[in-house]
Length: 393
Image 1 (cartoon, rainbow, N blue to C red):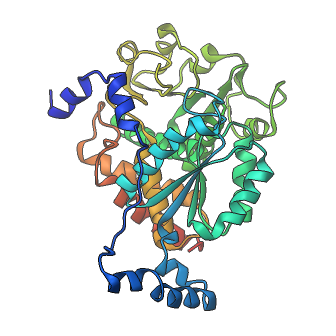
Image 2 (image 1 turned 90 degrees about the vertical axis):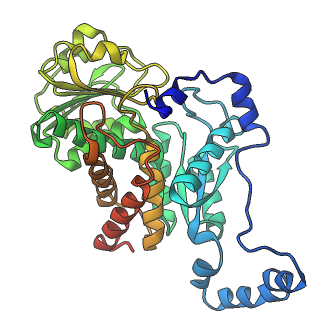
């Protein structure tokens, strides 16, 4: 057992958790000391007036002489926080502070949590439009579906800066990266895979879209009422759109019918999947049981029937964690001066994560560690290059 494994094995106490959050997890640092009259005159009045005048004459100066070009606003209305549901803006703040801490730690980006006491999409958009001079990008977090789709689309249209709902696209990027790793380990091509996704919320829909864009052979998507297909009752507009491009085999029914003969299972719901259904999957199947804290099937049980097993947890092999994606995606977008985050930028991020994993790829290492310092720089470089190719930088 490695030192890291031993550290992970130690139980985390409530007291340790609350002490770590006491006073919050963020503060503001000053990169240049203000320690005498000269440095005070430069940092504040009268020196600062020269920079303000320069920005008034040319707003582009703000990019180089304020922190906005390195500042991500982490925005939430608290309606879909982790597994806690709609707990409100104030209760979501510890999560948003944590997200900001991860931006700084892994992406070298400053970040400010903004939690809003409104769930009205247009009010949120209006608020962020008014605040636009204060930040360089928006990371939407823990906004409930299907409102999150409308909110993201309206913000992308209204703001001239990168906007991404991480619960959707960060999850989709790391799932695609992990799938590339699993396919390599099991000697399969993406175009030959039949993938089943259980859960048609924000992350499930985004995963389905990116897997289709990456060339996965067939994607079958399920919600709580079963397999999504054209004409089925209970489909919102987002599910109806996916019904037209998924489930090419024309399957009907529920998880049992979907899993029979499938190559990959991706769990993004709170439902439990019996071992006997995993056993009906294709030989050398892959199981991504990503619900937290309770995976859809215990990894030890899934391994009896699958060649590759991944979860969203850090105490089992193959953790699939958004932290491998979002710091580098935003870093690359901001480095390039991108005005939006495109599908190709997300695909490039997934490919970069997979490329790092190739150094030690095996059935228990289809993804690099979430703490691997190589990941964010590689993702940022790939994303920046894709932004230039797509003409958004």
